[in-house]
Image (cartoon, rainbow, N blue to C red; front, side):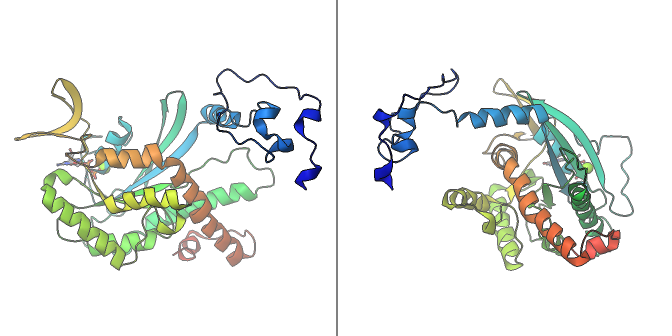
Length: 353
Ligand code: GDP
Ligand code: MG
């Protein structure tokens, strides 16, 4: 095959498009020789511009913006609202204890979604925080994850309905829950039965990221021991949290995710108050012994969680939601119903647990 390829020098000289100034020069180590286009490799043919796809994608994403939906679950007072505010550096979660005067515990689990548009470096993100006040606050917490799982499935259903519409929207609004931060109480003992039941049921339908709340209440030794114990318990109960082993793309992905899995659950501290430490303003919590700095990796793992959630895995969280969780829902839904007949909220729930 390769002998029949006309050598590049006898071809008419290709019109070499001018290379856009922002694109780096081709690497001198780029492959030459008989492989590649026309046997000459892309260096001989001149610059094609395939690498500008990244720039094109960047422009499109900047114009369109993107949705990110994060759910927070854990019993009240664990610092959920504070942590989300700390993560996104603003009052995005309006259900913090200081908001709206009195703080009363709902009789049942409520689902409250609050959306904000956050812009950074010209990129717009529509962030929706789904709070679940009342979770785990009752004497009998049996099945208290039902309203949560129902909400998650309803968002899949909404997306599916939009997708199968004949005249469907160019861009389907994405209300699906991309990530569920599950707050574990810093007891230092073990997980509660409710923690186990919740994560067991919900890890099949959503990306669960367990975190240890208010970790400033534990000594470093207690914290490490507790983290170790929680990991063991999650393993014993077969709870697959995000990033799930089975969805690692390749070895590089696996190595990176292994490190993250070994460091989980992140023991975090949240605060929306700033203090002056060594001439710098930092977010922290003032104690009688000094300031616990939220972003200092020697003090807690907030920065690890932030980097993981936003700076390295945000896109992957969205992809796993779409390609795995939503796809599972979609396949089951289409199979069960032989098409898309309306189903009741109860059915939605049952067919997915
Ligand atoms: P939520 O009910 O889970 O949303 O909890 P809030 O965010 O409203 O916080 C409840 C209380 O805990 C508030 O007084 C917060 O200031 C405090 N708090 C929040 N995060 C932390 C933390 O990381 N450590 C400590 N010690 N207290 C915290
Ligand atoms: Mg709250």
